Length: 393
Image (cartoon, rainbow, N blue to C red):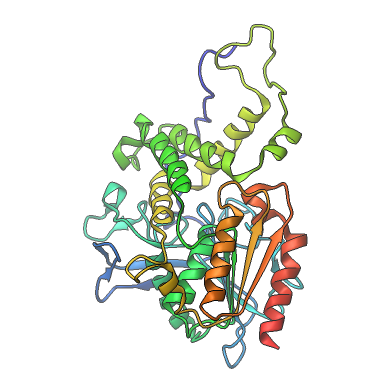
């Protein structure tokens, strides 16, 4: 009989962040703000900002076939490809990006960058602060979705891309997509926003707060200063707890019931306070996986950036903000999404339409919940492919 919560493997490093000296894999790097500070939207600045990105396909002579793929909270630049020593997970959108797929790399030059504040090569809390020679840790400033998009615009400049053929992303990626259309309306031809929103809702703020507090209550988080801790002594329990809170919101009750029901991992004979049902084992598994490839401080920073997402902030409201959009859009909901509920995508589509833009709204009937934007390739892939083809016609 278990008499304590689940323990984590002793070989998990204090941070799963990519560090210089680690295998590079398919990452490429661009350094910006080496001559002047990169000033952040809500205050503070960063110097020598590094952007890690990956590309697939070839940029045509007119640089007109470039597609930007934007990742969600725990994603990174590895949108497509295999798990390896350099990339600790398979491409998070493997079923969407590749030859002959929805984002066809035989036709398009595809780019995905790790966001500012991330932990897989782009400057974030685990990166070395050039002013101190040590990881930023708790001193890393608050960043916003708009800050992330500004770094992506600098990357586009570096790659010689004046106008993206298409910009696409789901969840936090969808937040970046809509900000691209508002901030740089002349630098994209069309966009797709999947399972996302114009502004984080009160319930989303509440779920986020629970996750962050769960992480911060782990004494091994050490106020964000844990990078010198030995393997097994990092804030794994806190990060796993935050992931568990999120994981519950990513899937539907139907999926949990069908997959786990009330099956127990431990015998019900003498079942104790810390005995586990199968669904608890599933949450522990995902928490441990994330701890091996992610950074706790990055989780806090990016989660907060999602909270701050509101396209109407400083623009006299949402309706006024979306009037800046000048291109066709595809907005997609997942019917069972309890986190980014379909009314939020409907609101986005209606706001875009009322501002005079061409909008295609689609509802994907799926039990997969919020994760449907990652999993429902058979339904969503053809929508995206057709939409891009139609806007290019």
